[in-house]
Image (tube, rainbow, N blue to C red):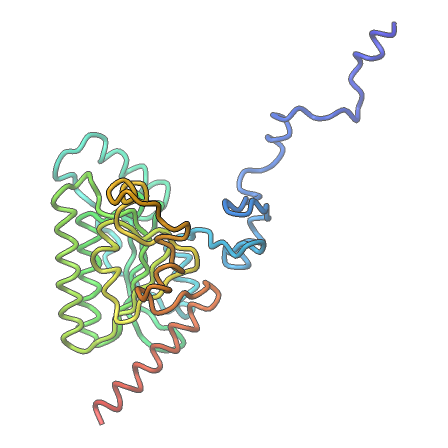
Length: 288
């Protein structure tokens, strides 16, 4: 009898962990990878996906970035239907690209277009790390080049938000060629005296950091962004030295003169507007 009393499940007994997990809707809460603060995702979105505990900048989608940056209803997208081929017939590449298109609802790792920031026109490119880790293949390089050419045609500044793991290995040398291609297009922009603002977000690495991302007339970054070419472990093994803890962070690059400013997400739009305003005044003075 006593055994039955102790074995009897009471109505206030703890719910099994698996059942408890099922009762929490997926995506309701978001845990900060840095300080482990748990926030309601809805609330986190209201503060631009920046952790209230430590200021960590969570990743956002390309379209979310556009909405945060440009004036409402001012964005016109370029080349939305461009899709990468499989030039090397790399195993599973076509299938993985198709899966990314379905998962992210975008056709490639970048969206480009034009719009205004507080009334100032600009051509903009925004990379999305959800698609093949934001890697730069033929289509990414082509879309960036076309966007730069549009900026030249319209005589407006070009703004690029980078978020990439580097060159896309599944496209081999075709991917590496995009480094020179985008850099050459930016040189044409520079020769015309037009403004290029590069904004590096987490992460900006590999062939992207070694090409267009580092060529801005003004180079900005979000706090804590990983920015660099080779990985930390590879560098340490090569030089046989221990690197600083903050190596390849936006703050480290700013301290060593490789960035002009580290700008929190909630100040980025205002900062870009100020730069565009100053640039427009300088252009008017030059014309006068």
